Length: 226
Image (cartoon, helix red, strand yellow):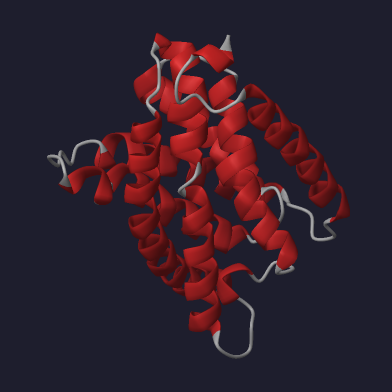
């Protein structure tokens, strides 16, 4: 069935990615030494809800005409900004997936309803959430340079840009290219997938870098006051 639909991301690619992502998620959660505590869960839950509000309410209220949108994409940009602040404050493996899980559920309550679940939940957990958690794991909790003694802005700018870049692939290939056609019922266009990728990458990289710098500053202020 999937091979007959032009532009749809091949099923083996989707299955392969999410199986590998689930294995990686299990590994980093198990191997992480700095476990989340009650306050971290609270921050992730509240932060995920705020991220959803920033995306689906504040961002969606800003209507931009084509071709300005999606090169300038307020919902996605607000999501990245708030999400980076949340994971920057917590800086423990699991913060990304938990906050994006809450993001998904609150988004269903605010805007979308629960049609297509748990596909949307799995997507948010094992793409955006897992990518942030991998960064936390690889940096040993020093995501966005927080905790580094020197060159914090440089680390933040680089890590934020990299995360923004990998985030750019999710909507074209997973959301529009696979899940949405199944849930909504339409045939995706390969040209549209390519356009979405090209239009998402520059903005996501720039806003990712900027958001990481903001997250670095806010996280340092918040943690110094705890």
